[in-house]
Length: 509
Image (cartoon, rainbow, N blue to C red):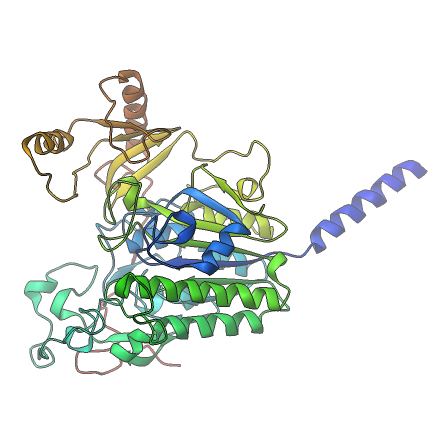
């Protein structure tokens, strides 16, 4: 009896210690349009990134981390732990004044962690809907500061369509003409082109600034200031900071302290300013002695554009080639994530929510997730394997374009968007790659997807085609399968700032 009571007491003591164990903080830094080899840890020789170099030396490089081909879908995956098509079934991205967005019924990583007692803040580019129902403060974040979508989705006359230093076009008077239905059409994803309204900066759900060139040029510094302020104010409690930078998306607006400093033009200037920002965040964590209590993930929302270096990967943003979806990612948590390590295990944006939930001891959403807990990989556990080792889907909008199992990747719809080949032989090879036939690549020895081995491995092609067929019963291949959930939708959507400069109702303190 005495032994039994002793065992019960020890068990109770262990459970109490486990319950009282400090929950880690989480910081997710998400860069916009950063290419695979645009930073030092992933091979850049053009851009100086000493803070990211140190972060990688003190942490782990995730060498096979998948995002999505473009912005909004990638961010929906990060927020929900699901393939983008499941929760944000749109052809491409969201625009100002969209009638649709991430459904408020979806449970985001912020809501999951908030339910576990975390303070939450989003600082930066949101891009999951700009109506009040879709903003971060309606999706689990205590506070928000940033641009609700891309920095090119504003007025050309105010610098949103041209890089720093380029002459601005003449003002187009859209205030008197209103929105042009020929451009807007019936597209519920929002206003495009010349119809786009002034670019708004928000604090929580209130517009606080109409962003012009000066505002664009100071945006990284202001995001960084807000992020550091939040960390300092949350040092005595568990917190989740989501820091999705506007940089390095077009138009390029490096801060005044970084302009012309790099040897890689405006793009390099902005990459180096992002590196500075990362250094500021890591430095404050070290200063407050929160470094060994905080998991920091640095990543990009999709592959780089033509301005970037995606080598040795094939393709760019907007494609399902590796260069469109495999992004440079680093995990940092001194004393927990083993220093100076790297992994080739498949991880992705869809793993952020379940991983944070597992480390925080938080409850997962009841709805279906596609991601998994990759903390054993991050913590360097022997034999840790990816939850996606046997299956990972590559969607572009609503279309399934490729599927991966192990090292094998099968493209079933893969138009080659590289520059036209020169020479008859090269053109013939490129045309063959675009003729609609299956293309099979072994990423273990051909990360650049340069050698189609489908003809040599018909059994692998058949195996992966069966996985493609399997998708029909869930997300679908070209249509919306039964596993696709409803978009959030509002009636009579309005831009946050009208073309006449009026701040719309509903966006007040």
